[in-house]
Image 1: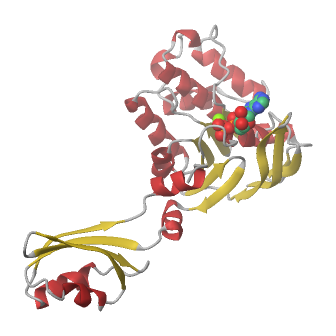
Image 2: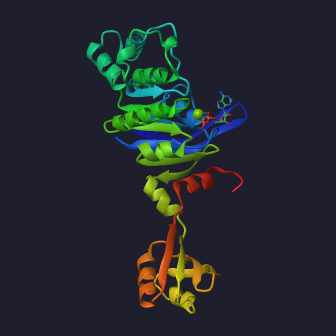
Image 3: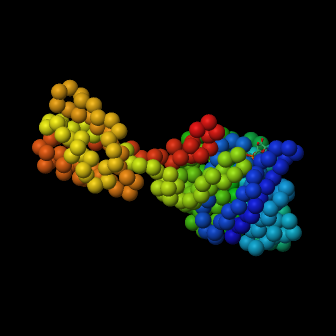
Length: 312
Ligand code: ADP
Ligand code: MG
């Protein structure tokens, strides 16, 4: 549906997007995740034909951004970082106007406009001036204008910035709902937002894609070893050796007594083996008591920070 090949963008001397390539299949909800200044907005401005690239090519549904931008704009609904709303217009007129801009004034629209106002929860404010609305409602108007021409693709640039926690949840649910039938790109610097709504994550840092996969795949591929820490009571003499003989246990990172008959042990296990069951069984056989057992896994948060922080 969207194909980006070797996309590069300079603003004067600043390299904002550095030779980026990716493909997005129809029907996926892709999180475009990266810290501020990573190049997310620049990339989507190019995909939506609001900015031209320095080099590289982009096609949207086989239309080229350089030669077929009018076609592309009809197919894409775009909510920019700060939606350019007209504060003097009332909600319904603005939404009508945006539909006409993209589909022409002959396009029948009454039903779709009502539908979009409903989807975005704007029923109660249709006659209000956009300038009077709260930030949350203005964001919904932004979403409504992105949806009103019934595009196949939806590109949302930081749609929840500046909203309160309840509004954030509402907008995220709405995105999830929309993602059932549309191809969506969600730009965000907020990991939980992407985790909650997307089935694929592209992580961008300093203009380059540094990771690409489902949240699960990213978790698995970056997860090193599994760390397990246990506290075992009683019969602790040769416990370390016995633990080391279990399948999947690679090494003992740390083993220290807590009092006279409790041992606290940190273990490292190989990636795909979960040794917790055999640790439990060992304690039973050994007539020791398993006081505590914790497994630490690398979180997506850790991965994201590792990939996008210069100093790590
Ligand atoms: P993001 O959306 O991920 O925060 P941007 O695409 O907005 O990142 O910015 C990428 C880089 O390009 C940053 O270094 C930013 O300062 C720079 N940049 C963005 N827009 C402009 C502009 N209009 N003029 C000059 N530099 C810009
Ligand atoms: Mg941005």
